[in-house]
Length: 308
Image 1 (cartoon, rainbow, N blue to C red):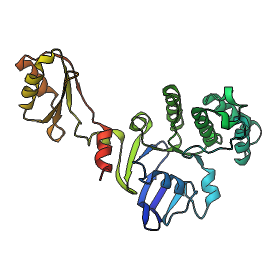
Image 2 (cartoon, rainbow, N blue to C red):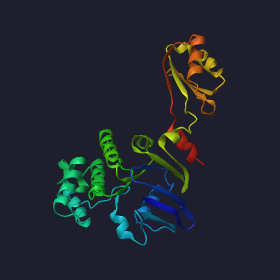
Image 3 (cartoon, one colour):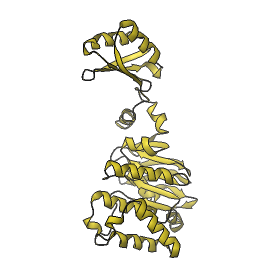
Image 4 (cartoon, rainbow, N blue to C red):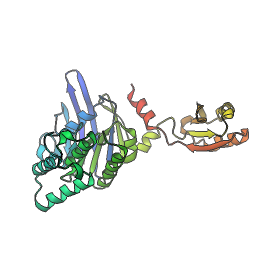
């Protein structure tokens, strides 16, 4: 597993990471969430041995990152922020170079190179220098480097940054396939990505852990959890619908979007309000064209937890 114990990093008076302790086990895809400056990248760099912690420790499959760095790093595939590379090398040359560094030889080497080139669709750019590649292709080369040795642990900092929607889908599918027997940690600020690929989400703010839950568990903390959204057939019934819904005892508030025309009924204490809201609409003779129950909104939970 990955295990951190009271991990901290200070730069003079600035505390970038503050007493962070957590574990991640095989099969988990952990989304590491936080606003800019929260300490996500600093934590990634301590886990991978790029910077040393001020205090605390991190271990990768039992290998201490500071005292046993070679063994720890041999287990890790790392895609850092920005995917730095030697721009004058071709994509193929860079992959061959990293395969050498990782000690890949013979048939295993050929198989791994063929696999990552095909899986990340690098064939068209293999003989181009990296400095001439688009941002999306440079990102894909970086991801190929991270997985070429088939590591037990993948640490990915903004893995879909710069990719178009199709490429994002492909990378997320790849992460899902690899997660069956690996530990995957993804640092991201894209909440859609957490919902799409992560089995667990940790939120940090100002270097401290503020939440650790499944994406669904985090969404359930939203005031929109179990909220009921209705789209009306007739815009002229918007005011009447709002008044009718506001009279339901379990409804805490009603939000109106006149463009829809839609209303969202927010429940008191997460209560199930679909039935009473539907009944009230029928009693008031309000024509509804669509109605749905919301699972909760990760963006609202994220803002609440990280905005002070």
